[in-house]
Figure 1 (cartoon, rainbow, N blue to C red):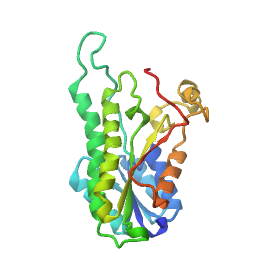
Figure 2 (figure 1 turned 60 degrees about the horizontal axis):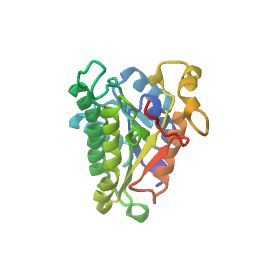
Figure 3 (figure 1 turned 180 degrees about the vertical axis):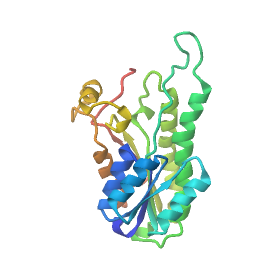
Length: 256
């Protein structure tokens, strides 16, 4: 894929992994739509990066909202790349707490809604838009990159909801890729390990001491720029399809 000839939609594009992806794809020549609910930072990022980057307030769980973001992207160029990098947190809970109470069902539903249902909503609507594109190399019309987590494979204590949601993203990858072979849309997922983003709300040095020290090599936390570089490679390598790539410095989560 020639990134400079397409538009890209990045959910969660106003922060963390998403912002790094927006910057990387814009630098590679793509028109980029930042789809997020952080109006202040989303507008500032779009203004910083120039005319081919815009911000559209987007709720990934709302069909009309996602369709509006896709329409904004396709107004600039055919939608060729869709990246789901939205995030959030609702706390952690053991299935049965120390006091004997069950985990809150609402918390489990929240994680599955945001990370799995929201990802699928973006995937299905983006794929439908891509299916209308003129085919390029090998008949390709676009690529969708979703964000899983290594917690999908080695979820820690208290992570049942998050791990189940991210496990769903992993399970979605291959069948979605197979579904979309007829329209020439590839589906990939990245499973990051511990990446330093603003969500940590602490100095990087403190975060590195707590979480980076456990990463085998490189012995540090990941950088959002490394996630973004992988997104670009996936977009440009037309033979990558239906796979989940771990990006974790060989880290394997322990129970806690």
